[in-house]
Amino acid sequence: MNEYMGCRVSLDCGDMGFYQGVISRISLEDQNVSLDKPFANGLACKFPQVTINAGDIQELKILKSKVDVEAEQNASSFTSTVKVEKKKTSVQQAPGTGKQATRAHPLMSSASMGNMSQRVTRDAVNRESPRFREIRASPKHSRGRYPSESDGGGRNKRTGLPGEDRYGGTALTEEEQHQVKEEFDFDGNNAMFDKAAEMAEIEAELGNKPDIVRLVHTNRRQPEAKYRNDQNVIEGVKAEYRQITTGEEGEAEFVSDQGLVVPAVSLQLRERLQAVINNHGMGLERQAEVMGRASTELALQLLGGGHRLNPTNMHQVPMAVFLCGVNTVGTLGLAAARHLASHGVKCLVYLPESPIYPHTLESELRLYRLTGGKVVNRGRELPGGSVDLVVTAMEDQEMWSQERCQPWHRDAVTWAQTCRAPVLAIDPPPHAPALPFKMALVGHLPLSHPKDGGQLYLANMGIPKNVYKEVGIKFASPFGAKFVIALHQPKSTM
Image (cartoon, rainbow, N blue to C red; front, side, top):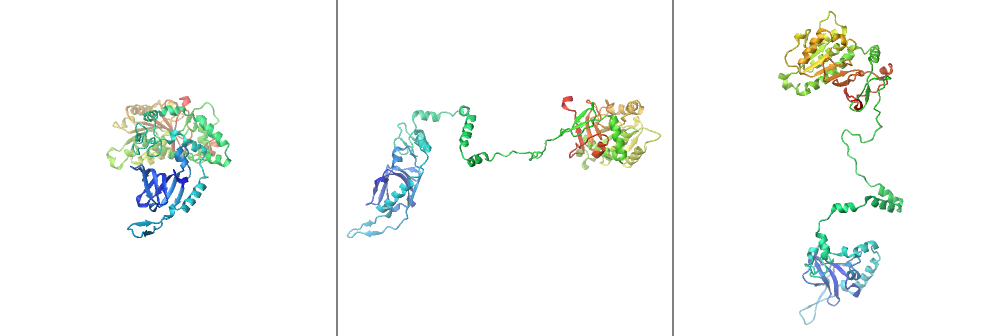
């Protein structure tokens, strides 16, 4: 049994608990085992040696061999488990005595020890790697984790053994204890780490590995990117921002919120486009309906939207004044007044007197009167109280200079300048406005409007792209999911 002397073992003693220690004596006669430096249920015993009866042992594990215990340098990677079935111990009473004699337990028999020796020898073939044994053999690795349990003389306070702590390691020296108490310099240690060299070393190591190992390394799961609700998960085709070309040079360009370029057209090209649109049956009546709806959308924004048109806010119903001329733009203004009145807004139309009105304008005026809205013909009849919105649709694209000289036009501008209400212009001419506006709405394609004007908006008139093609315009819709889009001056020209 000498080969088991000095081994570190773990004993499962059932109700008595677990014991660990180094075998110092094995007695076949007394059927017991003595352990040095014992631990009971993970705690060091008060006594330097304990003796355990073989009948109390249910399971025995060899933790370290004699060589490992003596050297404390090499760690064994295997754990030999010997499960012993607990058998009943037959008790015989010695003749002539009142004492009982215990029969030898099979665990401690010479045959059992022989089988155990063969099993330990067979399991010992599976050793650890040389690199791991080198790390475990280093003095720094084998020292205890709790230096505070060792007194100044290197003796453990709990076990009383020199140079060992409760986990079997050696105590720290004074220099090492001082290093442990010092504050760790994270920044300094991070600066010492050479990431590029480390990655190069890893790549060089993987270069000598089989393809399957390199494949597993390169296919490690990367952190998934997070997307907002307005971002595309799948990358699409690169956007083409110049989708509309007119064939004209020298005209201004505008940019939508999505970055799409919307070029301006000359007045001559716009008149040609208007003629083609009329030939296809999309006359002024249809266009007035679309522009009226688009103007109402912008007017509701300037009025405050749902806050002003709430049914519980009927004592503060907003009021809008429409300044219309006797021309095509005036027809668009009347259609806008009718649409806005249908939302419950109080509307008033200023329209100068004329012996005869164009047919389409007269039809729109008749429809507007059915809403119950008021119509005035003189500047002095314009309201003197507070007004929430002013919509101007007085100036034609060609006759704007002559119209500004008319008394009805000057009266309307003079009255509007005294109001503090925001101004919305419908299809204004591409010149400096007589009445500064906050927003302007145009259809088809914009003209070269000045930079110092208000915010320009473009309405979707629903004109097919092949209609644009007839006048030499390559057109692709810039509207996306919106009916009215904002047009901005390019940053390079702002």
